[in-house]
Length: 249
Image 1 (cartoon, rainbow, N blue to C red):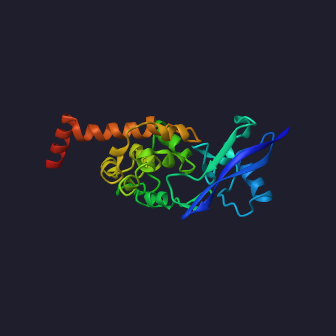
Image 2: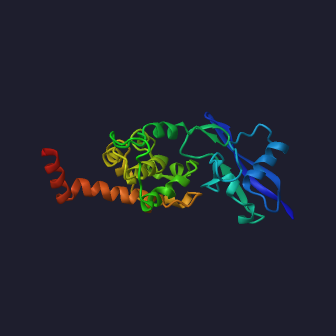
Image 3: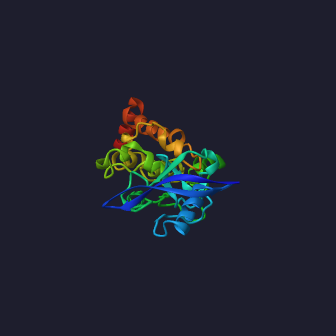
C-alpha cells in the first residue's frame, strides 16, 4: 500500500532559507528518514541530512518534525494521516549549517567541561567495589545516545542564546548527576553543577524527558535529585553546620 505524501522540508544554510514543498511516494512500514532518502534520490539530490545507523542508536538524524524534536529514523509514517502535510526542519536551538544539518559543537564543548570520573587518590585499580543498587541507580543514564533532542527542546537554551555560555543543558547535567551518584567519585559534583554548569537555570518543566527516544527520566531521576542535594547542602542548617565543623577540624 502506498500513497503520495505531502512534505515541507527546510532548505537553506546559515545565511537563510525557506520551507520547500514536495510530493513524494510513501510506502507501508516506512519512517521519515526513508522519505528523506527518497527525496535525495528523486527530487533533491543536494539535500543535506545527517544520519548513520537508522536504528535509533546513533542519535545522528535528529530534526524537528511538525515542530517537535524527534529522530527521523524512529518516526513512523503510520503515525500521520495520508492528507497531512509533514514539516521537517533542522534543530532550532543550534546554528544551521545546511538544510537539516546543524552545528551541534556546543554540546561537545560542554562535554569537555565535565571532569571525568575521579576515584579517591589512594584507591588502586582492581580495588573498586560497588553495590548492585549503586550500579542500578545510574545505569538508566548510560542509555543516552547523545541525539541532543533534550538539549534542543530545553527552553533555557532554545529561547535564550545568552544562556549557552553558563548552562550546559539536561544531557550534561544528567552526566554530572550520574557521577555524583557514584560512591567512588571524589569530585565535588554538586558545587560544579550549580556554579559551573547552571543547574539553577533548570526549572524542571520535563520537556527534556518528553522528547528522549530512550525514555530516560532525565528530570525525575537526575535533575530533581541533584537539585535537592544542592539545596540540602546550601540551605539545610544542619548540613551547613556539619560542613563548618568538618572544615574547622
